[in-house]
Image (cartoon, rainbow, N blue to C red; front, side, top):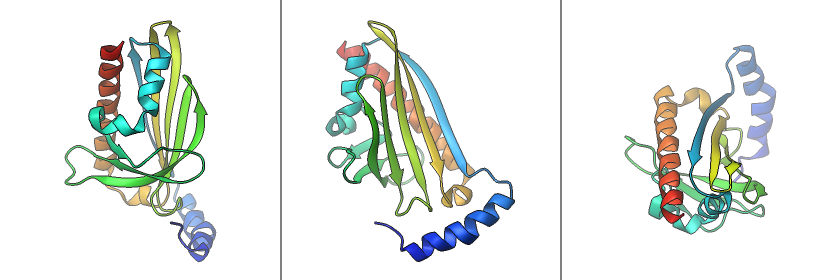
Length: 172
């Protein structure tokens, strides 16, 4: 669902221009790296098996269908110590098998709150990879969200990385 263009015009012409003058960064980023003792193909299969996320992933607990480049898909996530599950809509931006997966997300409109979920798989050996996992947040709500949320999101992403590592190493 998009916000009407009148909001986008207002945001572009007034809000974001003035926010820029306040010298506030419009992005927040969480960045992790994890060494996983499993082949790149195994990690890739786990990352792209969206139906199984609820079985192993403590952060992204449900994906309604398949994230693809044609349409936004609902993604439900859980942040520790927050009372309920939340959701956003994601669309696939990059899919390089066994190497890189990127989806862009938005909450109603990109101007309000959006993110890029980035997974980069670097092969260290035939049976070991380094996973770089980033979440980049942007939009107006970045300024309004309690800073503690980003700390909680950071812990949730680390928990996801740990669960992915355990699952990949168990299945290898």
